[in-house]
Image (cartoon, rainbow, N blue to C red; front, top):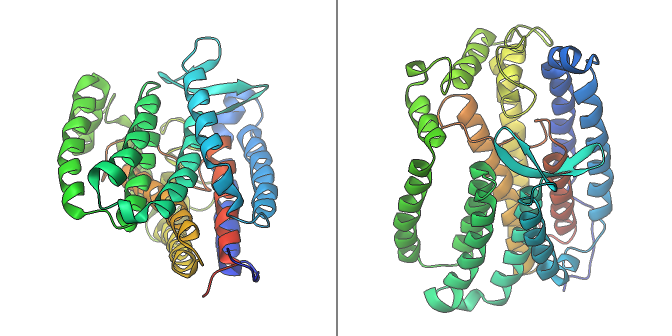
Amino acid sequence: MPLKKSNPDLILIIVTLSLLSIGLIMVYSASAIWADYKFEDSFFFAKRQMLFAGVGIIAMFFIMNVDYWTWRTWAKILVIVCFVLLVAVLIPGIGLERNGSRSWIGVGAFSIQPSEFMKIAMIVFLAKYLSERQKLITSFKKGLLPSLSLVFLAFGMIMLQPDLGTGTVMVGTCIVMIFISGARIWHFAILGLLGLAGFTGLILSAPYRIKRITSFMDPWQDPQNSGFQIIQSLFAIGPGGLFGLGLGQSRQKFFYLPEPQTDFIFAILSEELGFIGGSLVILLFALLLWRGIRIALGAPDLYGSFLAVGIIAMVAIQVMINIGVVTGLMPVTGITLPFLSYGGSSLTLMLMAIGVLLNISRYSRY
């Protein structure tokens, strides 16, 4: 157990707060027209995002001072609670349905998304599991299978909502953690083939997923339906050019790009701030990734290393998927851009996860 504390990673704090600040500005810019039309308050989404950001920042600095191995004690309870929430969200009257997905539970005027909590809980639990059983991870039956069974059980529960995007991020994050722990490559090769077959089955089982895949390959085949979002996103990014149209000057947010403050906020940012603005955001995420890897390498124990790897992998996977979707390189998945997209559960939990990473940095050897 680490004994000597030092200061938290200042660069990580600055990068996180910088991304959050850019996000708050862009949420207002992207949502003002839609909010004024729907709620007669152009600051409707911005105010709620600021509230969640405030809660998230307080939680981040509080958790930064909670020794990270404390979460190891609560790992099993966190996973059990999240499984209960995933069951509850499927019950009519408890779960809220939006855009064909029952993924939220109403809490007063707000709502929480249990699948977002499960992502964090699974990282905490898997870090505990892998740190205690690292020598067994090379065994398919004793090490790899038990860990993956729990991961795919959670994935199955999330798919009942359905929420393929969040489930994909969770599974991807867990696979990175298991691979880093020393699992055999040929085990992953076999599981990769099975996973590809299962993923193909999930796509073929729902017509809307097939449309998403075909629209990603050629969105102009169905420009008014399945290809609509990708086309409008590209129409936003293209005119942005090098320096953008100027902050607040987006044209696509005028009811062309649906709910631009959520999954496609990077398209509005690129339209208003151009290639320079988009590159700055990507650079900030790259800095965050670098600091996270550095913290993971310098952690004083295996649990801290796996926990840091899980957190930074989750952020990296979400960023790659979101920007890939927005730029037309990947099918639409409904994944938010960390710290920038509008969304209470996602933003608050992401800041809490950074708080854990900052605490690990206080014990880092580097």
